[in-house]
Length: 191
Image 1 (cartoon, rainbow, N blue to C red):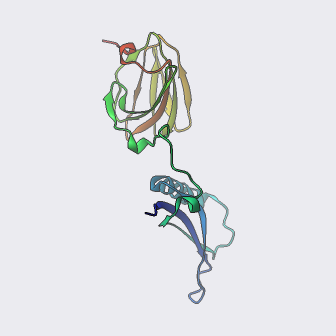
Image 2 (image 1 turned 90 degrees about the horizontal axis):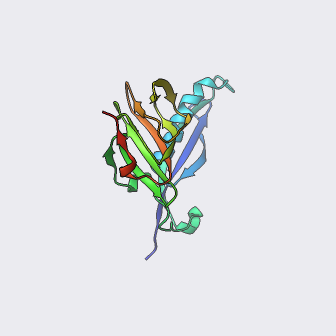
Image 3 (image 1 turned 30 degrees about the horizontal axis):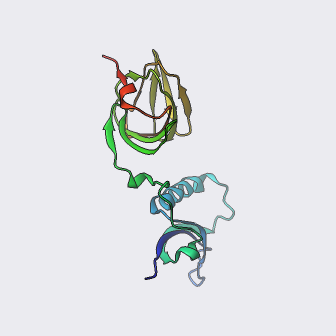
């Protein structure tokens, strides 16, 4: 049995607008997950109007096309058990929002948090945390100070500090790294 992998090509079609001219097409990048191709497509569409126009008459259209390939054609190997994809991890509802723990060892944990609304104020006796915002914007309160956070921000939260996240609109997605590994017993909720 031949195994196949579905890949997603991000394609750029360009033409001058002449109805007799065929568009020139080229694959910009190939992805193994559709959502990754969609994110890159959204990024390119937002970036396009900001770039200076090479030619006012040059027209560009980005699209995604899927195709099946053999693993050796995609130049990828079968993933071992220590690889996890976010979509393969069952989410749990927690004080900080919806959490998907993607990695855990004796010394640290990595979780992906999706929050809409307000998390519960809490602290940890043993764990220190690092928050890296991957999407959206919101607020992080540490102690009595409230800070605006947005995509690309990275914040360290020392153990013993009360903290919580909140979002006024939309969702906030945060990569949370804890040291030592996450333990529910180390979550101390504030009244």
